Length: 308
Image 1 (cartoon, one colour):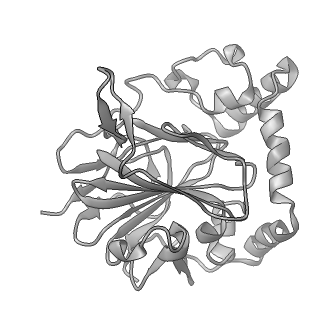
Image 2 (image 1 turned 180 degrees about the horizontal axis):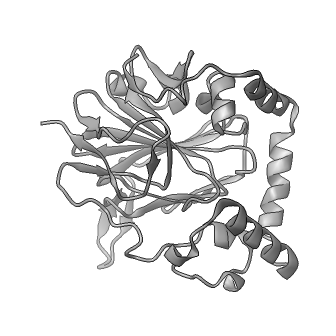
Image 3 (image 1 turned 45 degrees about the vertical axis):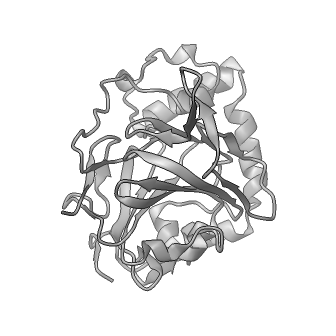
């Protein structure tokens, strides 16, 4: 597979990687995430102050970028974790054929979708159709196209924004596990992103179809979108699907408008952090040369361009 990948991220999994990853098979993922959900929403001054200060110190969070820099003003840890940024903190690209990065984070992998498979790590890939929630969103439209997988660490901004203008067509909530999405786990657990719980969205854009997938992980018990609100929890055994082809919302002037988002508008958020995966169809876009495995990216920066 022809992917832009760094040697460091594609190294063979080590014994330590297996030790870090395999104990997760026996963990009660949703029970632990439920506890974390309650803790992060606790308004106890003690817990709120303890967790916020600990995260800032451990991950060197730059609060000068936050719209609200005063940590004591957040009512709980989750409101701090999903804090807004100042309007000028993350400028967006503005070229007609430019694709903006939807999140702050680190590129896990980026490259071409081939033979219905997406590259995960050295020696591992996973099915595009399984990722999208077979059979509700057809993976064939992305065959030969491009993917980018971006991991969000606790230091990152945890809201997701649109990389280009798009009209919403379909959303699916796909149940699954909540394995960690750390680099070590990614190297070890087969089909990780197609196994974890996720919210899959399909947009029609001027570049063709675009899928943006918000992947859950351990302690990430909640994923929200701006048009629906909190999609998960609840977690149920079966896939839930919403079709938006004929759904409209009221515009500011009272007129009916399709559900569409402009480049830079907020798409949704992780309550705690995880991974975003972008998919584009064939012969439409190419990533910039900087978008390689382990590259640090900021929301709004140039991610790719439409091919001429």
